[in-house]
Picture 1 (cartoon, rainbow, N blue to C red):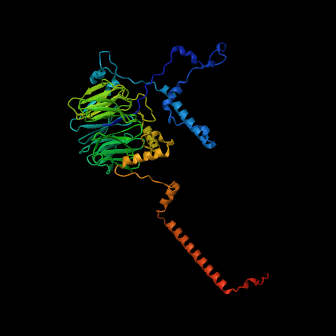
Picture 2: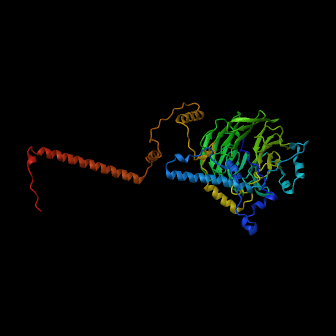
Picture 3: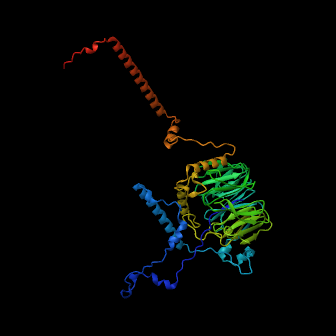
Length: 548
């Protein structure tokens, strides 16, 4: 099962200043006249720390344009303004790090102890009350196994039992949202853009419900679905199932955006890359394919597990394995937290690995045994050190120190948002929705120029064609200049449009053309008759002038 992760995030240190440095920041005008300095001291060699940290916030690195070669004054001014905006945005983002003082906390063991030997009961007895309240277990033996999913802000959770039991609730306040008994097989559940709508992959079709449990839509194009993923910035619901077709449904307009055939049979493993919205599918023949609505084929890393008992960590930039780990039995689920912790389940056991994407680890960070169960799904709660485990006997909420991002952006995902903020966020998200055509392996391609030669571009086109059409031969298209311009394509399409007013104008023009041709024909025949009746010396006869 594939799982992707973006680059390891930074560890933020709290803002602190020594007591002896507080005097250096007193404003000169607040001092008595007798001790005011004549001029403010200037530090010559003091580097600007913001300039050093802004490198990780700078976009389109290596795409700097040499303005000396730009001769158009208007274009040169526009490029200067654009570069200044990019620089100011990165500098302000580096300055904002001072407002993020919270650090990530991990388990620490003594010399003779190991963190993976700590049980959940021991952790619960030694943590504060707010953390212990996050550790709970729901025993539901009759309707399992269960699949679980969190909202983007981590406030609500949905669980779906294989025998038709679906429930949503606010797990922090222990407040039930809705509960359904569908009386048919439920394969997967997924939240949409917020907690007001969710999708359920049932026995035959996929259904969409609201937060009260009322059925809103039945997606009859999505049949026998095994896994679902929702792309929040594109408002796309992606499904894949036993038919082997990957389908994208726009939940804001109801339009079926794309239907892509994987040609690899039934698929039961799918996850999205949060860096570029590319979907990763794991197939039964041991291959992992990458897909988007426009190309058939970064989070920087990907973790896969198969029947060979190997847990592999891949670098997506080079498509090469970095590290390999061994699981006693074939792994069933893989999940990655916001801070890069890797959770893998096999049988009734869950293992969490720390820094697995950086260096080879000798032992796991944490381990948990859920006796007499079979684990069905894993889901890390955003912005919380919580891992939710769905198994045959219900669900369990485990405490995993260091899993969640401690500093959250309220404009992106607010765990404490009110109903008014939710409505405003929903409107802004719809207005800023990204089109499916923008999904690509490299999300920074927008605004860049392809500087490769014509031979390199032709070779890339040939390789792409052969990969997508293995049974057909590539024939390059020789396009004449101007034949396939946007204006030509538009005019060709307009030729097929049936318009009554346009037909009247065409008939009128044809009638006028016919009349002009007849008139010209009559004039030519009249001139020929006049030439035949005139003699050779008639040219010297001068007509009488008309008197006024």
